[in-house]
Image: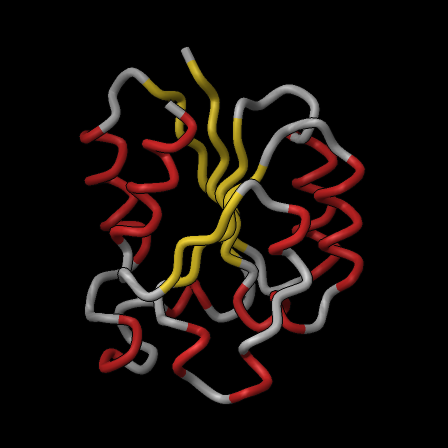
Amino acid sequence: MKKILILNGPNLNLLGKREPGVYGNESFEDYFEKLKALFPEVDLQYYQSNHEGALIDKIHETGFSFDGIIINAGGLTHTSIALADALSAVTTPAVEVHISNIHARESFRHHSYLTSRSKGMICGLGLKGYELAVRYFL
């Protein structure tokens, strides 16, 4: 059974409440239940933190034993060299996901420190991007 971690960063705990015009009306917890039902053959695990160090610790914890990491680092995408270094330090491959199209938003969101450390990036497809990332690892 494949083990895949979904790792969400700052403010993504507010999905369903935060800017529904950008991020939709569904909480990630509700979506995650649907995702697990869609992929019963996968050990899907989910972790969210608003703290950079906690995200790095989770990458270190899972980055040598999981089959994939799906990471949406939120605003840390555009600022955290430390998260990028953590992805480089482990052997588990990562796919970067963004709910909104970061390239159609403010210019500071156009750059990601994670993209060069990831197998690919999915952005702008809403929560569906997580499903597509799981399918990539399968």
